[in-house]
Length: 154
Image (cartoon, rainbow, N blue to C red; front, side):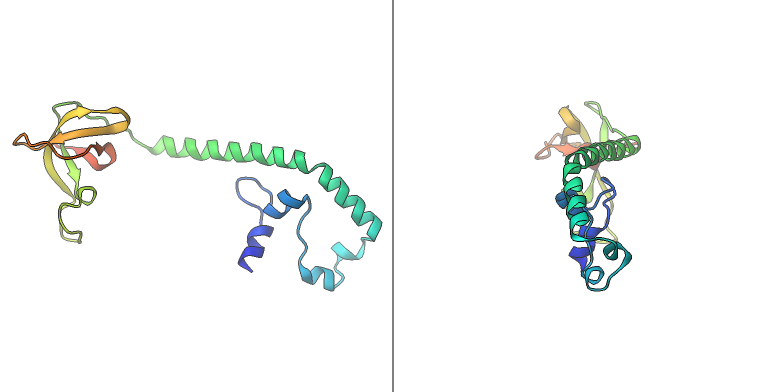
């Protein structure tokens, strides 16, 4: 039933069902065929075959429109996300804190501190990756993403 409902419910991004995108027409429930519903009762073999041919002819156009809707939906979602993301940039020599769960230095639990440090930024790489060292001058292994760092104010 879940698979059937997925195939027969219009998707948010395309406004089309996967079934109609594949076959060019909307799916019919088996119950609609067994019991003469209005959708089935007024159709004879010739008009049904003609409707299917018309639907197949316009299927490519329907797919193109759906592709454009999908691209617009993706662009809108990306724009929504990017408006709320705040870029964090640190300069070499700044003091920062590192998120404890990212380093997994201490066992996870509710009563452990969220941040550890302070550390000093020694190198700023592309895409928000930073090389850190302790206050004593020992370099921390691997680079750290800016999502797991925050400025230390003392």
